[in-house]
Length: 212
Image (tube, rainbow, N blue to C red; front, side, top):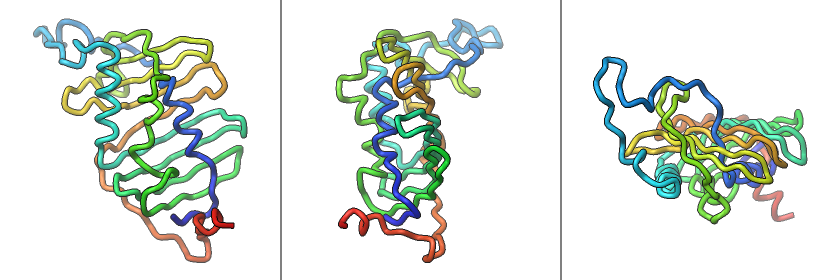
């Protein structure tokens, strides 16, 4: 992988997802029994699933995506972390990471912990994700979603899952309170990831740094 500077974002991303959190949004009525035209709305299979089944399906769908984009704002021990990264299944990644005011552009080719798409939601499989509540269908940026929420000593964590039986992707996660509060948006699922090669003078090969 080539990057201007290595920043330890691999630990910051999973830190949010185990308590996976959704965001507050106004209810558009997407979970009502009737649609806007008065016809009865038919519940999806995802709505009928248990909280655990819903979470498992969301993780599986997210891991199966060919690509996605993660935009995050997280407070860590090192300071505020802002991230905008595109990830592809073939190991490519591109984007930027800012930690406490220091910004690095990141470009990666190949598979590794720093950019592995499948590793992104790994902590949600570990058993640390204790879903305490599955909410009614609500609206997130115009899309119907199902919120999965847990409240514990580490604060309130919620995942918003797309209410789509075919592609129940994780769309947003948010932690409120706890050691690392923050929000992550997951967008651009399965869209082509375009990487622009930087000037060679601006590139640092992090694999060389790791061997020192």
